Image (cartoon, rainbow, N blue to C red; front, side, top):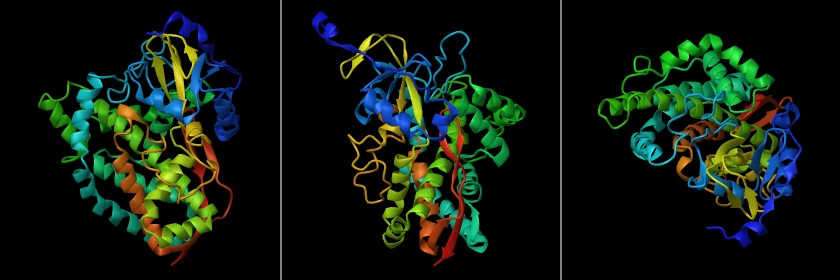
Length: 405
């Protein structure tokens, strides 16, 4: 319990008069990230009435301490429990123990390392076929022709949901813009996704998923009483949202930096273990999920800063993953950076850490590994461009040229 003297010693969060959802910030978030980190361990974002953390230590605390920072209000900026902002929550991401524990236990069992290793051969085969095609082209777009094409072929076969490109990307963009404020991006994404909503509902239903897949196993678990009715479809929906866009973005970021840094690419080519390190550094250096939210359960404190009850607090993982207090030379992409996996926050932390992270790692290892074995050099043919999305950072175009080994 906080004593009166301790409470009096707490300070209020400094006010930061920057809108992290402005187009300018979404296109180049790094000045905002630095301002957030330097403002203090916690800041108050005036434009939206929420707290925010951008330092690694405080970000990890908020992500891990569900006793003080609940997921039940949703991982977006709106509190989904309140009138006007209500939506059906992700039962995997937007729940606390014990409900979360029951669901995660079942899903973790179905996504065991043994199961994911069985998919490796399929990922490797698809990656080799794609690299064959890319070597014939020599010049291509690293997003649409490489990262998107690979994930939208590899991921559906593993999880069991059919994912045509146009529909899948429209639904993903809607979901990740919905996690932000009701700005122009939010409204446009909702409108663009309308033609595909019925398709998506059918795709994640019992009738829509592929037989003998993870998705079907979730429905079997529901039939067996291990999951409550309606949970399987809800979890499959979360899988699609978290397992496609974020992995595409992470692979894109990794390719972007390897193309810009030939010496780093040669390190990856000469030492196969660096294939894994390259993806980990790629998602640390440019984090796909830039921000996620928790809600304070009651009045509390964080690093000496007073926090009001029932208030959203944004965890800006993109800022935390470049915190110089935690990472030396944090703005530099470096595949030799020590202790990457489990150290960055791109895949979350605590009980809500990304449950499909092993799958994302297997996919990225297959594609980047296939390129490393067969491509001696890669370069950009024009500057990369980014697509502004409220919750995510992702490349829009990545014009590339490769040279066969």
